[in-house]
Image (tube, rainbow, N blue to C red; front, side, top):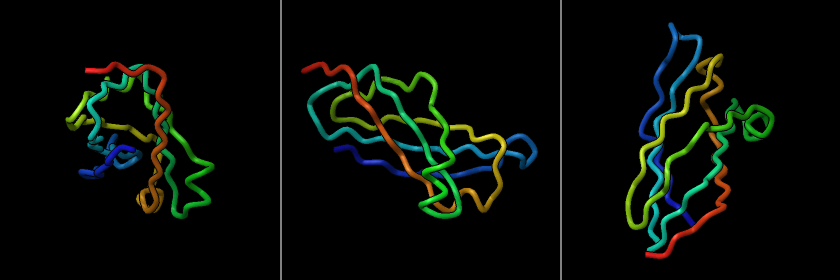
Length: 96
C-alpha cells in the first residue's frame, strides 16, 4: 500500500499537454527500487483505462518518506485531466 497525492496539474508546451505533479508516500520500512509506473488519464474511468503514459525511470521509493514524481502527458486536453489513475509495479525491495 502506498499513499499518493496529486499536488497539481499544469499546462505544458503552450497548452498542448499537461504535467501532473505527484507525491508517493511509502509508510513501510522498506525501499522499493526497479519500480514501473503507469498513469492513466481521461474524462472518465473507462477512458483512463485506454489512455496511459508509462513513467520513464521512476525514482526509488524510499522507506518512510515521500517521493516527488512529475509525469508529462503530451498531447492532452483539459478534459483529459478529470480522471487520473496510477498503477505501480514493484520488482525489487530492500529492507532497512
